[in-house]
Image (cartoon, rainbow, N blue to C red; front, side):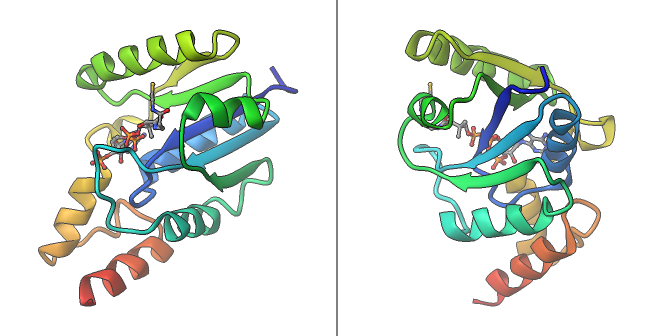
Length: 161
Ligand code: COA
């Protein structure tokens, strides 16, 4: 598996310890992991794409084989462009499964040569989501247990606006 390029797509609004845990696991399996930051059309992100990319780059700087790229458009097209063979998705709980199964099935039709691989984050991150982190931060709660200090700072700055 070592020469295979894997991509880990998501909104990362913002990147949390749960995402980082999945990236760490993927980086132990693949020589190159591309964290592919995009905008899910059914969501309105709080952070602009460029800032979500920048935050992920800062948080993941300690992983030499991991790069972060932003993209717009179809994941299948981006995966083809970067010659990825694997799409990584994190499965936190059974409730994630239905959507992920659908996404994997559609991507298989769009680009049959790529496999979707599911990784589970460590148990303490299975309840974590970016929107809950944002909500806690907006309401003045502490989110330092869930995000990197760089992200914490960005959240605090965003809340001040
Ligand atoms: N730890 C913590 N949280 C996690 C997590 C983990 N390991 N894995 C997922 N999450 C959370 C995210 O923070 C996010 O939380 P939120 O909804 O509260 O913001 C939620 O789970 C969804 O995760 P995410 O990975 O961001 O998925 P998404 O549903 O926003 O994105 C895309 C799905 C981006 C991969 C999909 O929309 C896509 O491929 N878009 C490109 C366009 C395209 O090709 N469309 C056709 C697809 S067939």
